[in-house]
Length: 287
Ligand code: GUN
Image 1: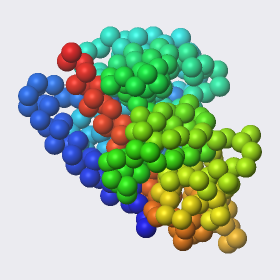
Image 2: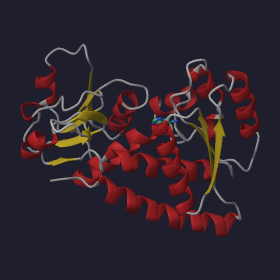
Image 3: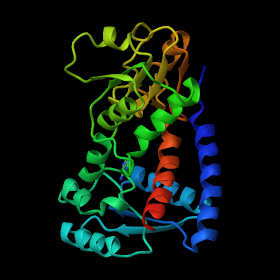
Image 4: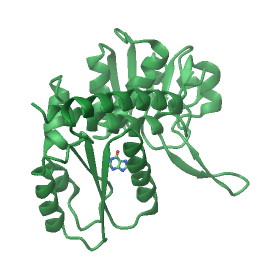
């Protein structure tokens, strides 16, 4: 079956909207997210526009700071210091990628970890690694686990999860989250030997490598839950461009128990989890 990420994300946003309203009436504080975007990459601007719109739709404040491509690293660092010290700002997100002259890791490290709604700061990776409850966890990995649970139910204990990809944004954190859910986790990557055989052992297969339709039917165990994180732009035989995942959806659909589509799977969940993190950051700010 198909796992509907759009619907699952809508359900989560509806729940968050109620929680935001309760938070506002109880504490007289409106949760707020500040998004910084540097330069004019069209895809990044579309992502940011969606983030801003959905933040406002559930009743939170969204501030968008658009900076020119020439912005210096120092300017960005001093802006972050200002936002870090502003009690009315609960969440800070710097849209990536940044222009080449800005050191991304220096910028991520400069965000107050308690406002780091992307969960990219080393303090939050460390908290996740240690299984500490206060971690702000990266949004896409959270979305992957919620979608797996959408099909499998709350308890993932003992299931074998195979993750393809080891990025700091998806592969590593999703592996940590699945481990926290008591899965047996295998992390695979481009140098892994016997990749198809390993994938075929997965009860939960998370594909996050960025290679269009890499995962074929014979990589998938009968009845497995397949979470496809890939967003690859390909040109069809007719010359049109199309988004496809890291999994060959049509092939895998026949074998698996459930699969997330691209688009309409993990993507919508990423923003919904960003909103969840923003509300969590606002709640944490009270302590
Ligand atoms: N660019 C693409 N995805 C993301 C994301 O999740 N967070 C940030 N900050 N930038 C991105």
